[in-house]
Length: 220
Image 1 (spheres, rainbow, N blue to C red):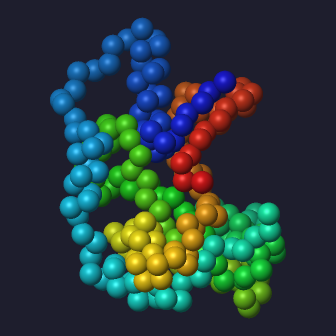
Image 2 (cartoon, rainbow, N blue to C red):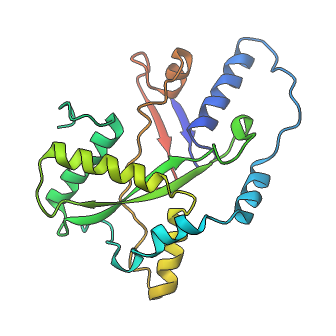
């Protein structure tokens, strides 16, 4: 069995570990490299970096009207001109709306955020951030319209990702004292465009020859 706990790293970290493991498994030595920064250094630097004023306003202005997660009980194959991930998010939202008592809700999307941390490509660690995406299925639009609207919303939200979903939750707690938005407990994760190498696919379980693999994530 292959088991990887995403508490210690994101998808890029998993690929880095697999690459180094395969090098050592083949009897080779890892190439010499300059001392690299630690995850702690990146985390501390991130705490000192403030989001842009525009991004903060983008998220905080609609915060009072932000919907909670879907209140759930205890066909992306069409060519609609959107990315596979956006189509799957839309389909996921449509399924959630079928079972949820609210048709306007927030879904939590973990996003890989290494671009804002230069030099992090060789660091094993979790650089994932979260993106709260509001989905509104009140009007009962067609799937094509829903998928297109979802992709537009995703692009708009990503442009303001310097203000994270964690920060939004903190502000929600500060405003209401009770965390009206909950914890965005309904999560959608996609790695469709990861473009893994064949050897990475074998190790990670995304290969026909692997009969069992499991990945644990702390985000759900």
